[in-house]
Image (tube, rainbow, N blue to C red; front, side, top):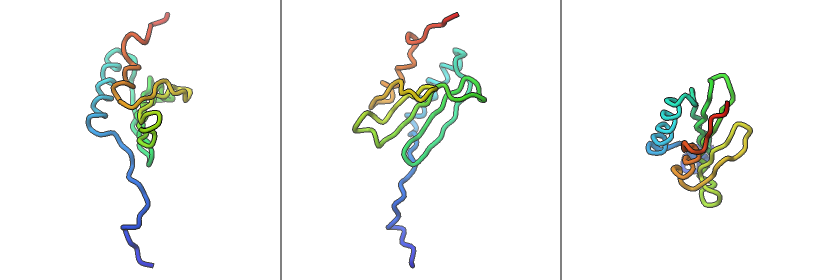
Length: 110
């Protein structure tokens, strides 16, 4: 059998583009400066790219910011997922989804 690269069925991995990653890292930097977050991780699969946010590196992620282009026409390609797997925000635009982390949303409880 002869290998023919034109008949490959594998898709390219999904990843953040420069603007998207810059916007996410800008938010991350602000939250690190505020003392809320301490570490992050980035991963990519064939159908999603995930930016995981940690309070401590040894814990499960507090939040996951996911990009799933296959959902772009339905619910939106972007999602913020909480620690228990609950979808906290979903949308078509990254900036709209990242508004979840605006200052007024969180209150300090003693």
